[in-house]
Length: 177
Ligand code: S3P
Image 1 (cartoon, rainbow, N blue to C red):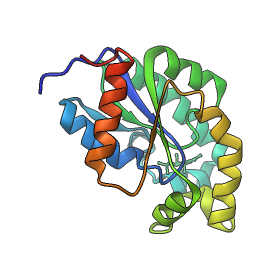
Image 2 (cartoon, protein in one colour):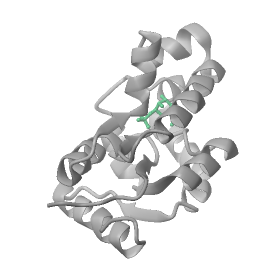
Image 3 (cartoon, rainbow, N blue to C red):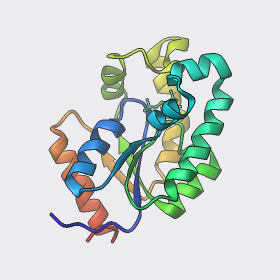
Image 4 (cartoon, rainbow, N blue to C red):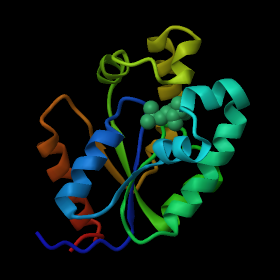
């Protein structure tokens, strides 16, 4: 399939929404490069996200996240999976909205909880009860994610169906031909 995309597709959403796995598959399907912002931060810092939080604190991580987000948004159109907090600061959000196409992978609490329970790599969820923290983050962040140009439900269904929904929306919004 020969597709043409006008801007970088930026996958946003809470931890466990499927941004990395959907992003990887979408990049294969559309023949575009894929980057995972958290992985790029880890490479640059030569440390895992958990260790960055532990050694330097969240503020330092957010600074690196904002810097690399800006760098990647200046690259040729590709697929970019972001960490759950990347779309929240106003500065990041307006950059994504201007230079990219925000695609929110919306998922409900049970789906997110099931997915994040498989790993202990997310520092924000290690500070207490995972489900309670997720619920609080949903309350805070969903009103912000909701402003995303494209919203697609990330359900416990084959990825192929979610990918088709994203592609349909990208075409509908005039970003993919
Ligand atoms: C965070 C989400 C994580 C990672 C960091 C902070 C957040 O990424 O960026 O632990 O603020 O929601 P994932 O959403 O890929 O787990």
